[in-house]
Amino acid sequence: MIILIAVLIDVFADAPLGGNPLAVVESADRLEDGQLPRVAGEFTQAKTTFLMRSERADWKPRSFTASGAEVIGAGYNAASPQTTDFLGLARSLTSAVRFFVTAMAIGLASPVVAADLAVSSAVSSAVSSAVSSAVSSAVSAQSGRTGSIQTPDGDLYYEMYGEGRPIILVAGGPGASRTSLRPEFDQLAEKHTVVYFDNIGRGRSSDLAAGKHHSPDRDADDIEQLRKALGFEQFALIGHSYGGRPAMVYAVRHPERLTHLVLSSSGNSHESSQRNIDAVNHFVASQYPEIWGQLQSLRAQGMATCDSRYQELYGKPIAQLYWHDPAKIGTRPSVSTDPRDSFRLKVYCDMLGDDPEVIVGGSMATFDVRAELTNVRVPTLITSGRHDTVVPPREARELARAFPPGVATLRIFEDSSHRPWVEEGTLYFSELGAFLDRHGPPVH
Image 1 (cartoon, helix red, strand yellow):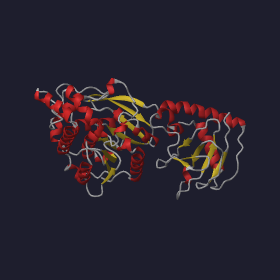
Image 2 (cartoon, rainbow, N blue to C red):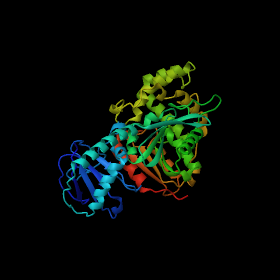
Image 3 (cartoon, one colour):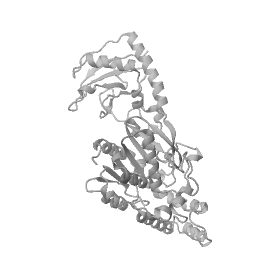
């Protein structure tokens, strides 16, 4: 049987309550001037931190250890949100538990430690049963809600995690699926509805019909189709690498729909794409001359760089460019072994042309929205890794300058390459979270 001991403590108190994590409830009607009176219940059997969400949308749930120290990310494992996202669990607590806690909060209004509250075995049993039910339902809910929507170009697959202000993420490549951003961005589901999706032609979405071509503009259409289907009036948009390009197109077309824009390691134009190609080729030719020689022999035979044989050989040396610490290559957890989620070379070559490792072609040959970004006033965060050769900080700085003064914030992460959200994840998500909290909906 779960034994519940409830005490009322001031937000700055450090009263020892035993050796187990706490179930914390904060009273929304008293959230003034940083004073957060809370009723804390110690569930000695569950030994798990639970959080109760206030009805206030701007309230951030918090949890505390038995000594009163605040726990950051307690009970959350980004690699497995379906089993450990206790914020989602708290949102799913039954009405019986909410009623019980509310009654305690009303009865114990003082911000000073009052007294131990004896709870009858009948109430304790009821709470135990309700919590068990909530755990079961919340764990199920946090496994993600999946679905597909119909668009003019086919079915668009998506997954949603968490609850709160919505965020839509756009994967890179071009050709990568939504799984390339997981599990790291899952942690945003602590406070947000996080939406991953596969652009048409990628992952589990439909292939693009014959005769049509992939482009950042067409991919931006997917974002708007998804927004409409999910009923979001406004949302935050995050694009990584190539994903920043359709994100920029969307921001130009629909700035009124965005609360925030995040461009992570994103190029800004066909010019930046060509600089990227030249820099990577210089690296391979200089550091791996034996592989570069083999590649040139293949080209002498008439092979284009989109040929899978060229790509396989080329990919070996350049894989390390995505990491500041090459020892981390292959250390990220895999969230999918389904072949449908693998990289789509067909999309990459359709968008960049037959020789994408030599010259920018396809729809990317003319891509440049920098002039149009001067009219975008959505709060924007631009991130880059100091050691990123693929999209170096120069490109991020140039991109930041394309926005009106004061709109874009540039953040360069000193110990990262192309994925600072992996290599400096704690710092990256701390700053991303602060950015999302700091800026309200923009005025258009």
